[in-house]
Image 1 (cartoon, rainbow, N blue to C red):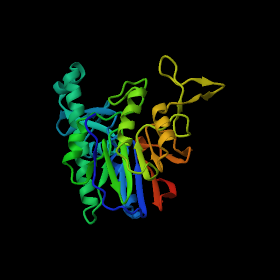
Image 2: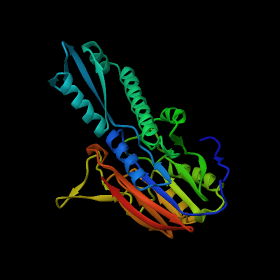
Image 3: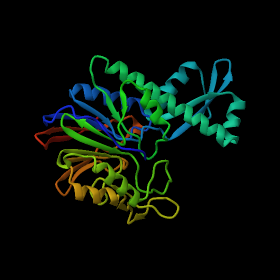
Image 4: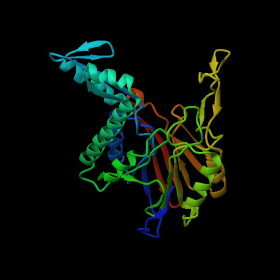
Length: 324
């Protein structure tokens, strides 16, 4: 995981801090744009994306010539293609335009498919960086941007080159006297996603990060996985085929959060925990004295889920969900 660095504190005082937080955007450009617009409308001081920026699907568009394109068995012209691409970007779907030979190569060569997926992920994130620069150009705002369990590590390379997106994982960030630690790995899932870690390793890593904190009671835990057993981590119980278990006509829910995160939060009792990962579990709760929040996600239909949080005098003065 490397060394944990610590920013030099800007101030020893702790004032008011307005945070606008979202997570699990999964490639949805419209949700990202709404996040920026809402952050400006609320006049927030700090913008945070908690992880899972990468989309989950890549659709090949076949150029069949004479200004015609085949998209998922549908033939469209250039105007129709523009509308389809707009919808893809809104709902987090990646696309690539290929000829018949390129399409066959994507189907037959896993390495070629992976490289095209990588190109699409990097391209979308670079577009977002440009959008953020344009939207925030009249401000000094930056976006503390983390990766989640679905995000390949090469996305950090794009973030590091951005003027507005700022990598925060592994650092202790000072935010007007409040400290924030960030961690995007999650406990094991049935899908073997890129950034998973055993519970004991999550605990050891977070313990090392916490050792760099001056005052835990003034700390923001920006952790992608929610703590186990709070109302933030309810997801469908899956059977051996990874299908939801249904009893008496209803889907059975279960807790899927991290026991290590729960343990470290109970020990440290930070001021607030901001989480994501479980899209269907929008909620706020308490772990001991700590307020914990998961805004949820509906990126696939272009809806923004976020949380507006105000910290003041070492307390959570306000927290509310923003959906649009």
